[in-house]
Length: 265
Image 1 (cartoon, rainbow, N blue to C red):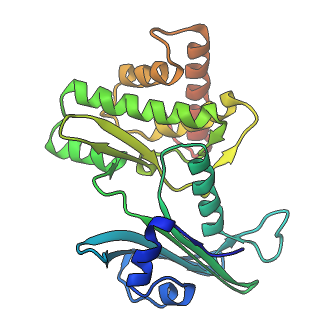
Image 2: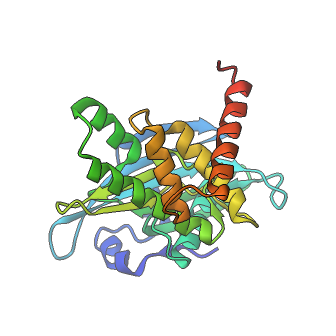
Image 3: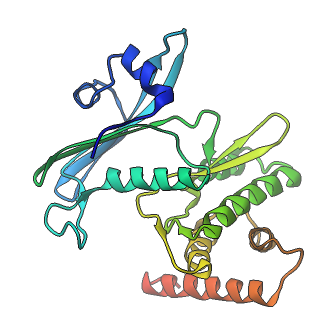
């Protein structure tokens, strides 16, 4: 597989001497997240601010991994680098105009027990995860209802866009949903961490999995009424329908089964 370089970033990477695999692999940068050591290897993320040719800086998240793959039917022994799966997910979402990350660079080297991969993405400047927003609201006070509803409707629109194209995120947790609020209270939502995203044959299957992830792990700051509003916005309905009630019951039942399996009361 050939290395990918985003055309918009090609001159920036070249200006910084980072337009090839080896340069990015050996770049000295502090870890943004401590390396994850499992699956027989490691994987880590660094945030890098790069000078621009015209002045100023732009930030990327540089993800590097070694021998950190997932086995599949097609690759039962060597496995597939998790960043390859994430890169393919990003490109699939871009092809279908689903708001996600902007890829900067992707490349792989080696095979088997000597397998390395690099994925660089543009920083989502001005965005914060929904999980971080919820924590801020818990500390500083919940914002006006109108803004909270704008956030809720932006998330619902993003999820509807994914599912209309039969993309199921499968880990649609608040920490993977990024929100940007403008000074005019406009709200934009994007989804990240697409390693486990898959296309499913039916939209209802996407809905059951992703609505469960969102509803079960969202902050208690969102009331039951808020969650119903999100469901109706996702379905594009002014009021509850028979299908909406069906989804609501199925998601609640799925959540209860998950709690029971984890031994929660």
